[in-house]
Length: 218
Image (cartoon, rainbow, N blue to C red; front, side):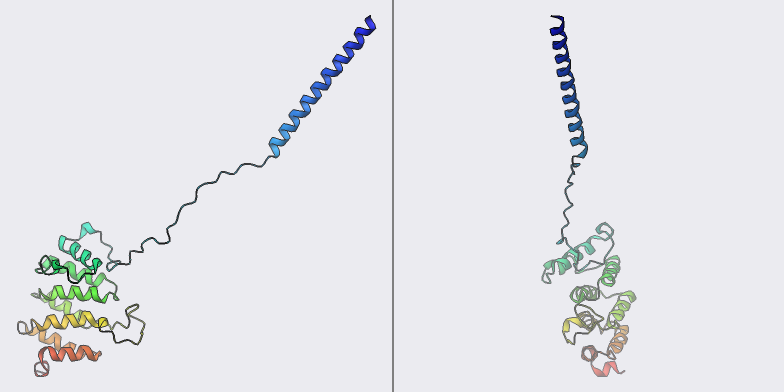
């Protein structure tokens, strides 16, 4: 009887040991699997880059002053230039009469535009030409007429062998506006004489036609 109990006890001990060995082996396996398992990668959403974002290449792209720093008429002019509507009635209403500070800002706007913006520049010349009253006004027109020749609409410094009249639009507009005031100021006659020697034959011819050859050569 004692011998049988010893046998049962030995068997029980063996089973317990086998069970412990199995449990330990299983835990070892789980730990090994956990350690060797690939580390999950957290996928962060990529930033969406809009390749079609506006380049801000409108008429006044090089104007760095914020809108709050321009006066009311200049902000209106910028808006009209961006809209590219030459027939907007506000040109003949709100922008017809300019004060000295308006004209000063318009001149700054003109010089801030890219030289290739011929139409926009010509529009500013037209607006200022309706308000020629001071020496500063005339000096501005002298500057416009003696500007370096623009060689193409895409790059004023690279010739494309074109005679597009738009290339001299600011100068043409300057001469036309000076013509309307030619009888008022002798100084305008002097500017027209300078224009009559312009290397571009279209500008020099228009200068002569503006006041007549006899007046220019006096």
